[in-house]
Image 1 (cartoon, one colour):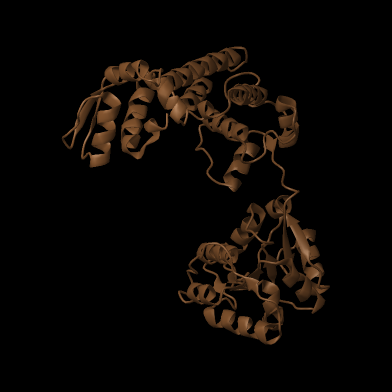
Image 2 (tube, rainbow, N blue to C red):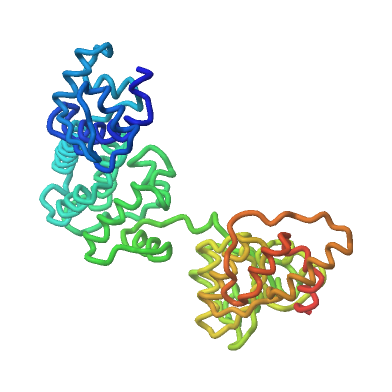
Length: 416
């Protein structure tokens, strides 16, 4: 086997491996090697016991297989390559297995659909056909794929118990519905394959577009009489004084007057008349410590915190305020994730950078060094700051990450 591993045969074995894997591991057909060097010609001559003198060679795989079996190797071509490694893959058999699994999975899904009130509904069969064509389920582990499509059918049958497009006369909590059809309250959580499949079915049944973002997904759930979780995720706010006349707006104004922060849920944002005076400048920060410090200092400027990432509830609030012509100023961490988030906020809301320029970064870095603050290395892949072409280069040159707390006194001055 040592001779077979010599470099002069490496191109031969690579070409043979490709041919075998495509032909069901059978040594059939020929391969042609071109631009042979001296070492390759010598190795092929020794292997096949005939001279190779030109710069190209045509080799019949049956002849090579016979030669290996008759030689000291004592095994056929496929066994030889398997021994040389890595293991061979019978791609034809693999394709046949995938096709057979798709057929089996499709038959099982059709049978599951036929056992529900959706059996005679064109939209339900179109839904199943679209899923099968997409290959989504075929890419899942065998047991997972069957469980997922079965649970999706059961969930849609629960929502449309009479068939057709008429919804059940009941409002489900999404966790309750998930428990009913999957056994887990998190079975229909956002981002799961099951939730995506069910939403695709609801969209077809209701003849609406498939949702592409979190707000439209929640809207489609509600359209199907399913209440998504709108209370567990919150956005941290401070100093909001909406002009509305309900007790909710009055409560926000009172909390602002007493310098208290407020966590708002998606559910509250749906019912609040959250309109600030037109042109109000709203400051947006990344870290909750800024809100805490603003409250301790009795600052009055409106402030919203992304808490490290702009989640759906954060964007919902900012979208609401942007619709009332509020203006935004944004500050975040001077690190690459911070720049990424700042790019997102400044682009979406035309937010003004708030002490987020290259001179701001240089000043804070110099001040930290003078104070003897241990430097925090700037790691990761650099991100271009869309609002200041010099910022990324400056950060990369100094190599120091600065969190928002490094600028806390300056930010509080701006909020006064």
